[in-house]
Image (cartoon, rainbow, N blue to C red; front, side, top):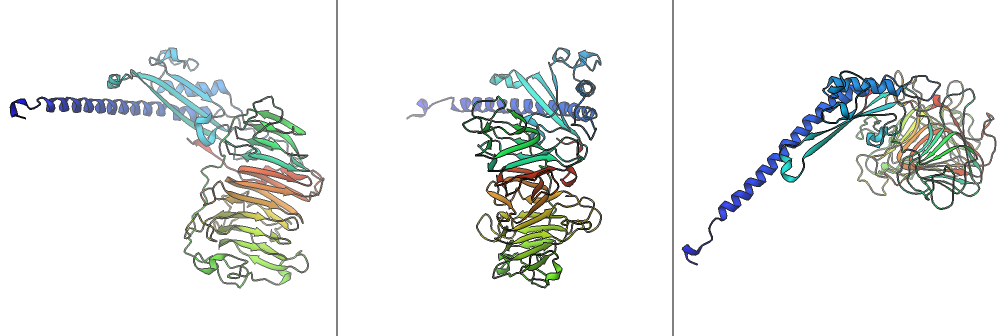
Length: 527
């Protein structure tokens, strides 16, 4: 082709397209930057508005927390006006409505917070303030967007430093039978004698629904399943986001299509610990468990056999059993409590770094006698060995907690907030008072882990069981003596789990006692 016939003007076209692209990018950058400026302005109003609204959450410890909504909204409105919104209201704190804002802004106050508040959704003691407004776009009109909507929210707390009022929470938002009652006996949730406040609620978050929200159990599938001849007896409310399957509870108020709630303990962190240090020995005089090598196979194996103490060190031990004394600290590779072993725990925190815990037939686990009687306060924290390669089936990885069998004995009580909890604290109180079992949600067994609690030869456990990504199963046995003070299958626990499955051949007694449970106190701006 001759030079005179060569295409002309290509550079001009490319330059024009490139210039348009640059203008478009500049338009978006300018409008996005403007949106962030508006978001900051809204945040400056929502944050103090939420804090001010939280002042009107009630604090009477004998009643459920409520809010004075007119006062709370007026307080949030005041701070919205102070930050440039609703200028046409002229300072009237009852007039924060779109008609009184040049951009048609809206002010929403939610108690309890809605789903956009994440973990705080549905929880009393928290208030949510939302400000939303529309603004004319600058350059985004080029791509057909004439207005920008900016929405900002804040959540503030005025909790009383009390226990969450639920006994059972199944956090899974999908799946059927995420809360299940099975067997031939009853699961009974009732207040301890003398307690008259709120508490003992049941919450099942799953959306599994047979299509009916009539507050009655029916055939089909459901989030809560009461199976076979089992029974659920609750003094307070049973809240199910989806539906209830098979049979109605014999006692308590069933509410289907209830609001989902978030994890009430989300954000609670376990203290850091050093895996490079030696672990605790498998009994007095034994070698320490180690994070690497054969000793990582855990207590109760050929690599790390148990080291018994004199029988006199375990008063009340069943005749013919060996006494194993353990001190708080880290145990690499977990515990296997074989038949005719009585494992006694000193007060404090036990970190199971891989391997889990298994109690076999006739095994016994409890803590040393506390002052005044009963088991001493302990916490079992189940996690991975940080030096192991997980996930795998190795002893260094998080595994199940199988605490008991049909013939074993189990006695555990959660930590005390007024006593030290070594190794986390050695003086003063304990930041995890009331916690008895904690299944690490960041471990390698997330969504696959299991805590199975059974004590056919005797079951007594109290405190909060926190397993936000694991299942908790409690198996009760013969006995129909709930509320008598002589319960043989006593689980005075609060369960916050991904899913739970409770029941057995006899009544499982679950008295609600907030003094024995973990307390999370939050005040001020939380989200």
